[in-house]
Image (cartoon, rainbow, N blue to C red; front, side):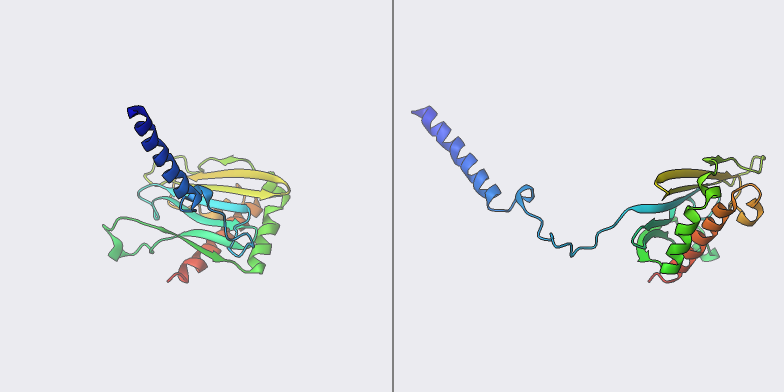
Length: 192
């Protein structure tokens, strides 16, 4: 008789758990109510540019310059400008979202499909061959013409100095990075 009451308690617990789950209070049984696509859906990433800099450069660490989706949406890291009043304040950034114009989108898409960019090397070593305390690494990942490509640029300086790199980097790569810098600068101006 004792075992019957023990099992009865066990079955009551199972029954209550099942009742709770079937009542819809558990997320594993809930149905997505947004099947009509009313929620914004991010599409595929076509370009991502990330800068990683040493502690003596600004911004230090890793920041997202631009992530561009095929629906013109972008993500980027917002951070305060490097001004004297920020000395001693720990660096921080915040991920933001926006959209770019059709004109900017078309220009980037065109640059991504240029043959000199598609045929670019995967790695460009620093052109400054001295030991300095500043360093920067820029990673560019993009999709174009049914392929994904990753290019890494490194320099022993606080910036890449793109105008000086026209002979070293493909022209389309320089133009793309300048476009990303301009878009990033404009986006950061309009953050609340």
